Image 1 (tube, rainbow, N blue to C red):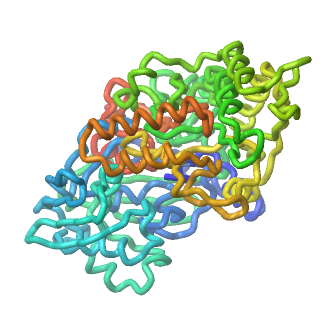
Image 2 (cartoon, one colour; image 1 turned 45 degrees about the horizontal axis):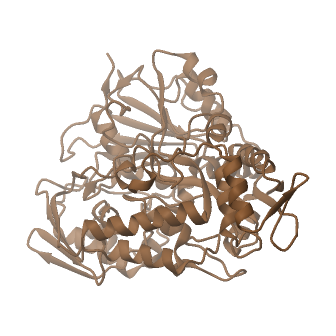
Image 3 (cartoon, one colour; image 1 turned 180 degrees about the vertical axis):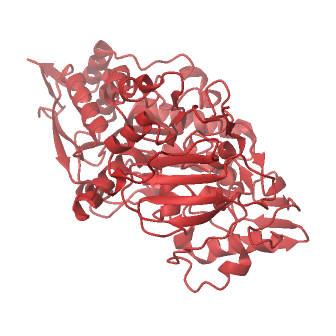
Length: 558
């Protein structure tokens, strides 16, 4: 899920640019006055994404439908998966059942005969097969990079076959949303089609679109039955501050905004109804090293730095306790990844250990004298941290790490860039160390693969778009990733996962600093039934697939 995982920062920066281009328009200031309520059947959602272009192509992650999240109200998945509960079986949706063979090279879907499109036509196996063939034919639409194989219709079933095990991709495959063949087969270029009058099988249809507000209205003939929420209004704000103000006033009832003082800015405005929940999946944020540059090619140096970073300070000061704290040195977020922890790391902690770090460095030939750490060749260890200006949580995190590593004699400075320049430098390997996010998935495989996979390794100067930005070269890690992906038994998978954790801790290709949240702020004033820590039935963020599950469960508060 690459850069999309960084919605809060990317959105804030992108919208600032949009606002400047639009002459700092105040278009957000008057729309949606008075808001909505359960009595009128309206639910108000929104984010700081700036003015949008009319594009509802669900396959394009840059479309308004993807950015605002309303594509999930129109297009439905075969099965509804959960990132915060990766070990829980997915909920049946368009498919009533799916069965994998033992090697995960074949899956058979049985479709729900009740499913139909919003225009009244039945949703059939032909639609499902068409969708998978569309992904197979157009790589630009295949965001998950699945190596699609055979697609066959067998009555009301659809059978997919693959050349290799899809164990690590199974959730990505079963959660695929389906588009209607009778509409999309006439599209000349689906990779660029704006799809401005989208037709899906979901409970909502696009009613009106403006750059600031998109309105969806309930479909009376939705195949799963009537919905309590009759209208969805997606508003887009020019920055985090404007979205926070809307949340505080109650004009916005569901959002995903980073606020450093959320208790004061949001909760205190209506303590009874203003809530937030920011659980994590199995993705993280962390300090990536350029392991192709000396002395950061030395695993002992990286490990020692990892041992002194104060994750709790990052959690409380940089992430305002919104991004869940990393408490295990493997980087696996808890509790989502608890079942994957290797026995040797079950009780491990990330509590800073300065003396331990000094011993690791001394054993590796580093010397600490007069408060200056020198590498085995006698050169002082210095580095530059880089991240985009304005990404305040990252910049604060870098300041904390800078102070932490000073305790072991490492001098660091922080350099800020434009997001565009930073993105190019990260891809090309032009950095010492940088805070960046990882992919996430149903297991920690996606996270580790993003960080350590030799198959993604590119030389310095050649863009690495898919991951391994730190140019980490480890035959052992690459083989363990292959073993996990191709394993046919849980025992073999566990052995491979345990190996990956050991490499992460001992060689520290990156330092995990925070879990990536799938969070949301919401209000119970007009609507109740939201997912909570006590009832985690869905990922709470409204840009995720399971936002559809949430909307269908909401009911008026009075």
